[in-house]
Image (tube, rainbow, N blue to C red; front, side):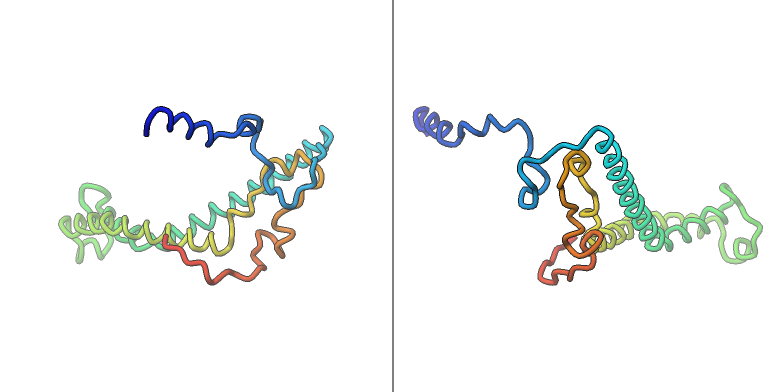
Length: 179
């Protein structure tokens, strides 16, 4: 492209209104009442506490779900590494019957190595399970933005969709995603 064509391209691609937008638009423009009315200071603090409490509960639920999925999927790795460390003579050197009769130092080392080798694919499986479950349950839609606390008349997204986080709404079976 010549310099003249490049200058014309820049002038056509930018509009005069693009520089005049002071901030991002509201969370969901279709359901908002324009212009939105701000809450009083006391009401804003009350709703802020409510939004923060709700987001904290959603975060805690997500974390507990993630921890339980990882604990169940990684249980074979945990067991193998535990027995490997328990029966090795330089680590714990347990006096249990199975450590004396079945596992010596070489087999304990093999268990430790096997446990750490199978950990990587199991972490991938656990993350894929969590992501697919979170997508199906729409867990990340439960987080509410701070604008819910600041402005009056802002509708809660989950209320209109048939329940908390839209879980009561039928799942879309047409959407396929590889994780």
